[in-house]
Length: 91
Image 1 (cartoon, one colour):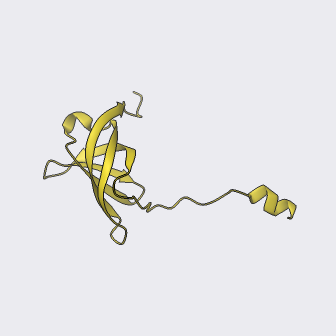
Image 2: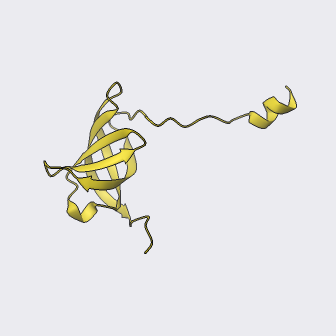
Image 3: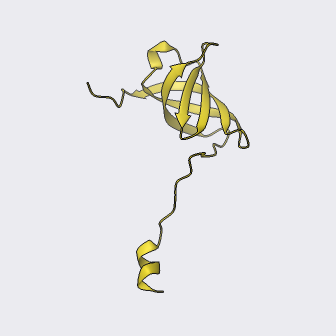
């Protein structure tokens, strides 16, 4: 193994369109509530629509159970489980 291979061992690039697996739980920030009253979380270019998240969860970190995901469209749906953190903004 070359020095360069040792140095780069374990490195990988993150994608802007992560895939989410149904029935897994993820922590995300809810960025807005759409016109249908559903929370929207953006993970790179992926959008996760969070059922049960209301205006009080906007700009909060929440735990979501993924219920469906379309990898081609990079969109999915999930259900709000709980708020796990405050906003990442400091003001």
